[in-house]
Image 1 (spheres, rainbow, N blue to C red):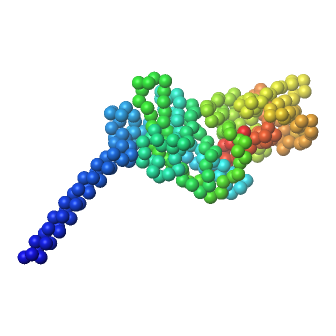
Image 2: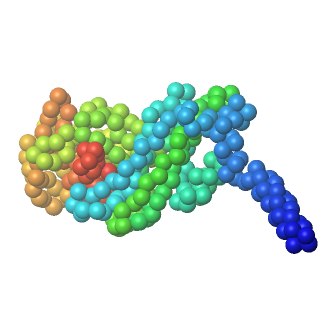
Image 3: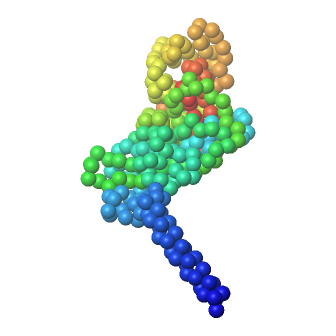
Length: 291
């Protein structure tokens, strides 16, 4: 009889302990960042933010920028998204810990944030062999409008990362047959798009040169393009493979040419001689210029 009473008492004590721990655990969970994050995602009308997973404002896409010359080498991560009506500025947040996805978005990636009016960004500050998370916030000029959050996307970098000198802090992104020139802060529509000629990327170079901070001039009598930037002077002549860099002559792979009243010049030659790094992204037919 005493043994049975003892067993019942033990069962009661264990049951009460479990109940107490469950209550304490539940209260702790309600106060946790994870619950607060999920709670805000489902209470969009209360928080005045769009967090609902099935009703996000836009979806992110991400892929590695891989060098064509070196297999498996990553130059960075490119993140793109569709435009959101009413949004003028996008804030892209990054975190490299899984816990970052369970915190409130305003704390997400608090040590890394990019601001742009474009609908894409290239992250050149990643490290090899790491998992990164990104989330996007869109804001408009009207303070009464609902803020627009994207979904969260994750991507691994390859184990090998190109060693790019840290003197490069900015970038230009171009794509074959696309007139858009993208920078860290914005997108610019050029007069015409880059094209491929004789396996070389060529384009009217004015927009690129002026974005880098240089100047360009055209001398019709000589049919000569002159570019000055970063202490370098480049001279090229239409339909001639001869060029001069600071007075020293050489031969181009592809001669400049005129098409639809636009002068096309080889992009790699110009970029590298203006102390910039250039990467061809074969997957998307894009060119990344770091300067």
